[in-house]
Length: 391
Image (cartoon, rainbow, N blue to C red; front, side):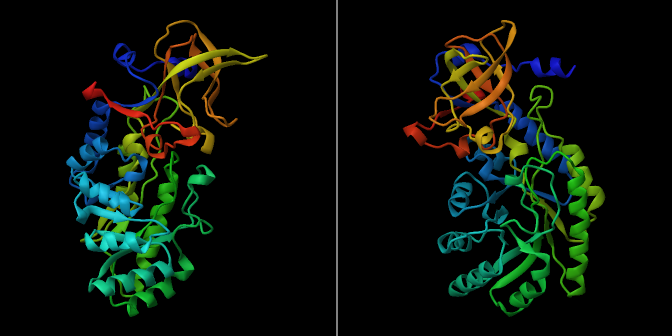
């Protein structure tokens, strides 16, 4: 049964693709709208607030659609803040995270009076207070606290442990509160957490809820009530079966927080979702350049590479791959790109329909961390973006 599921292919307008230069990013905007509708449906009548994580995909067409649904933005650079504003996200729904916010970026946030700065260290708190003082403003702050919760995901995308570069460790909180008491231009409004990305074991979020409640009680003992609790993002998607599971399990995700994290009166619970929103709707469309016969391996050399989708090389990540031009019997290929690096490999022993030069290949679930992480290494061009409703 698993083998059968893996062979099911998606539906693409292949006839329209034939005339287009490859590689390119293709976005199924109908699926994206259905995803956004699902999120709204699962959070309606709840004190939940969604901030889309722009780092997942910063394509303006994507951003404008998400902003039109009333969601906020989670930004990790000053330029992301400016792009969010340009694409219709209101400033009072923009959260700004990141361990290395520069003075310029902090000024952008202060000048546009964004919703919140997610502060990640004591030195950042000091600088933020100084810059806000110079403008005669008070900076709204949520403390990003490391809950020391293991997200059971890849080490490069685990962010909530004590030894990560992100966030404030729990033992430093008393010092941080003393600093805030003395800082006249800081307004503490909440706690912020983010334990990692591509989390499919939801029990990790249960562990996070337990820690959040413990810390909320600790703040209460200090005489502090926080109106904002931000649990970050991290919900994973099904990379193995994008055709059978095209939308992440938002229902279970939001029900978990509703069950295990009871809010106090006046509190709102904030989420910073990125991958789960946009990854399934995007595919990297590439073309077979050569089929090379090795000693034991058949190589499918395509015109996209790690410059267009770096996740397999960086994280050893799996992406479902389909030959959308062929219905021939399946055969195993190593799907590789043209970049002059041995790590430029999308998949090994990938079962694909028999392939030939010129066939179109779809690398699925590339809507997150595909286009946004593209590079011009080897002097390659950044590919075009194509949208299902504008072909």
